[in-house]
Length: 520
Image 1 (cartoon, rainbow, N blue to C red):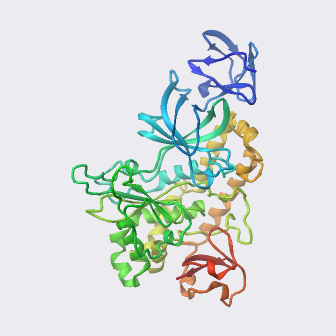
Image 2 (cartoon, helix red, strand yellow):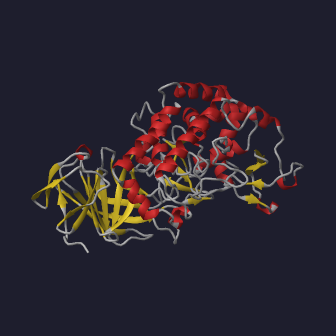
Image 3 (spheres, rainbow, N blue to C red):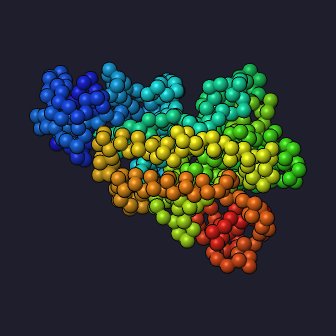
């Protein structure tokens, strides 16, 4: 039992973990590795060789140290918003800050009834700026739930932020961003240690600087959509109709304008772009693709998707944004939810089935028909532009050099090891059903990722972009009934699921004998 009801060290209130009867205090990293005198509840206390691996006992209270920010949520949490408090201890700040907010669980498959390490969506009562990021009231605590390294989403997004070029409207809106910033923190919920979290901005209208709805006339300008399910419409197959009074459309949900803000939303720019990609001849596609798509960003997205092997980010977990539909209906893509990258499956296991899509030898491209036809037609030298852009980014010291990518993982690995967060995370969540019973071993996983990146980049260097949709691929006839095709072997969808019933085959892209096929 805790002997103290509160412990304040260096003006920061320590967080209490009832399960292990231990307090966690955050202090500046510069204090680690040395002896120092710290103020504990107003009294001086000497700590010898401050480090994350030791437990210090003061009047029966057991204390550990971290240099990561610590966030504490107190309240009742579930699928609906509930009022709660958010206390933030930043070791570099002079004191803690506490806010009132509305908070709920968030996520798709990560938000099922049997999940344990939850994601949280936070709506502060007022806009706040956290850790030098944007000023806003909407924030997310990302648990990295299916990822045994917990930080792939943050690292992959950091990589995207550093390599992606600005949207086509950047001259008018230079602060537009098609990626989000984040900060690794340790989270407590009602005196329970919940582990390592990525405190993140949201991808939304504000982030991409889309033009707002006209408050006087109700005219819709900016639009934003997100792929939320695996559905053939997300691969940009024809959509026959839509309803602007609905928040979802097949595998998409509208992000802006939302129906709780307006009487209607606007699906037309997305539907027009999908139908353009689905029903056209190649000549027509080449003439008008630039009217529908932000090709510069799509080049970068194609490279990024292949480098990180984003097996869950083609159609699903993609945003599509329109700056101002009254001026241009061009769609700009942006990534989201990048846990299933760098050799990690969304199902929590490192190895695949008969088709191992986590292998560093697996070559993936963006399986969306708009990209597919850009690859096929090589519009304005699209494929050549991809290769030129990749070589520019991959040069020694470049953002996509092998050493640079591994360096990102090394930085975060050292961060959680030295702070003690890796040990606490392992103790809390290793073997949990959220990771399908797998052991969380950060040392082993770091070695796995470094080897995966090294081998993956070596293989990429031996080919050209696009990695999968080669000339030979396009010379093959597409198939209408893959289960009756003369080729032998099982048929899989892009989720790695075996398709045994021809009734389950919809227009889309499938894998057979290790190769992709298009079903029209």
